[in-house]
Length: 621
Image (cartoon, rainbow, N blue to C red; front, side):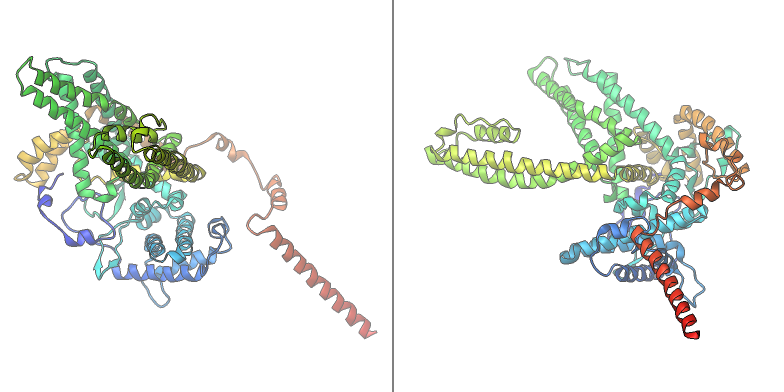
């Protein structure tokens, strides 16, 4: 629920925190780290020291990142895992090692920016942190301990003598874009449980997560619960449905122009939906902070700004008398802004296709390309300002007045778009104007545009070479964004307007917490009842599957595939097939050249023993 008092409070420590508490609060008490922040920081420092000793100099990246690395050996991983438990101490803080490795990774990234002469070394050490953390996660067999203590438990460190607000490894990996760690099997299993709502935040202790109690409950009505709308998968479905309705309203509004400027029902609903989306973006950005800001947030905010301008100009038009030129002009401007936003409406649908692997990878490529474009535009702006000043100076030098600025700006923009026109430049202080325009086109078309193409190509190759991990990182980020929703009661836009206008403002400030929570449950039950009827049916089926898997002593989300249907009838050992495979399988862990050297060493050892035996027998005779 919205706590309006937070809007009028400032917290200096919150602004200083390296890590933000970004998962929802269910109580007013601050969340405490189960391990003292000082101890967590010391564990991180131990790991940093270890990484510096393991990677003492620059090495080929493959030596660190390859499976069965000769640098990140099982002994190194075992030592890192033991950083939380020192000899002679009874305290075991091994659960925070993965979180500490992510903190150390962040430290090495920062150190690489501060010490550019050793940037590659620090980057390699940051990669080593990821590799070790991934091995620790994949070696852990206790999934309950892994998910609830290692990945979802929140920990703090000490920064500037103050404890940071607790955060967990799941959030930290997403924020740092640690794709290698995110791609590990244990991490993705935890994300899958969060996505399906099998892991939920404890309502009594916001620092820990608990298993959904109704996972094995086959009673239909026990799953008809408005609180289940906190499940990311269900929120995603509602957002898709609402976005399709939003697009339908826009299509109806743009195809039914009202010459008089009056608002019809379709347009009214369109602007109400826009207000709900805008309030949702503003509220989440305020509560979550800069971690919430992403490419799609900026894209959606731009769309909402265009629709807001369209609405404002429509209201201005309604303020003028009917059948007056001013009313028609403002009404026309309103529709122009509405039509101008059409591509953004359809491109917005791509946001909901990121759960599919192909679209997800392509969306990551698009986002990285847009980020790389900032370098191009930074160079472009400097070049444009310089040449614009030169062209204006030539124009001013001709007749002591500036008269061709629109022509200059238009021709400069045409050159950027690849359509330069050299006619008309001969009158700019010949021959300087034409020569300067030739130079401008050479810099823009030959140099800067090719720089942009190279940046795009590099971004595409970097993403596509690691497409699977990038897709998993995008899906994890999407899941965390749903889990990070700061409100106890989930009102998806535009239903958030109901919460703001009809619940928070009239009731929250005076009603007791229990009664207000019951009121919200009732309202959400009515709003989401069609979806809850369907989700209750699906969760009932899932409960039967979970009970069946537990009866087979398998994981809750296990499915029987084609190759598993008759696996019980295969007797590998009894048929001798296992022995034959064992004798013929290659050793992929150890390098082939090293294997040959070891084999040669054994043969030389046998040869020495044979020679000693012959020498002893000859001496005896």
